[in-house]
Length: 244
Image 1 (cartoon, rainbow, N blue to C red):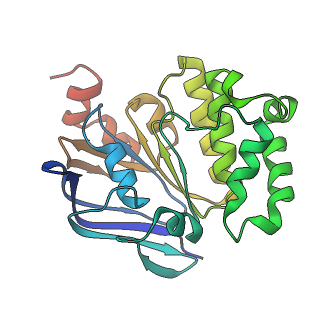
Image 2 (cartoon, rainbow, N blue to C red):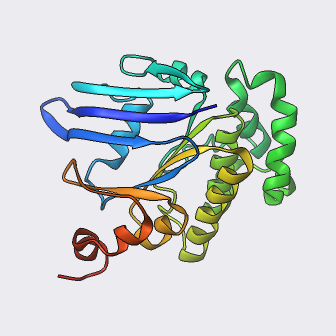
């Protein structure tokens, strides 16, 4: 069944500060779409608009879950997660004084996920053997890469249809960034997810993206239908590759 996100004419900000202006974008069912942009251009704000953490001042955020449309604007975050939209937040946002397993089990809070939490836990441990090895360890004592694995695993415990990933490379060494991006691609394939990934690491993001958008000063400056079009863009050369 179709699982997609459509954003139309979105404006959003914080108080008098406008961050996003006139955003139009679409993530089709089964796609991995990269939302690219350097720090401070509104990527995280856009993710928060989808999850109900920031309410748009104008525009629509529509999610189709298993073929059924849902207007997300005005819904509480827990209701949006309950539809089958999961987020791996920037900075991981784990519970540092809880164990790995406790953090994972907290991910299975939504009604559809609770009956299958043992099955989901077994899947996470199979997908991330390091988490199984350290299931009794406090999350706050793990390395950055391990915490990112845990954050991804926790999101998968919700049994999502759509996965939002906000800046997965932040705070990680380059080799761990590559592993994290590969993990997102693998989970997408194994679970048939639709993925929107906000990321500033252009070379890593386009390795797994089907296509992408470039956000500059709160506006979509480029919509590219494939990774090669992103690479060939003057905007991308200027922002990421040091070109004129």
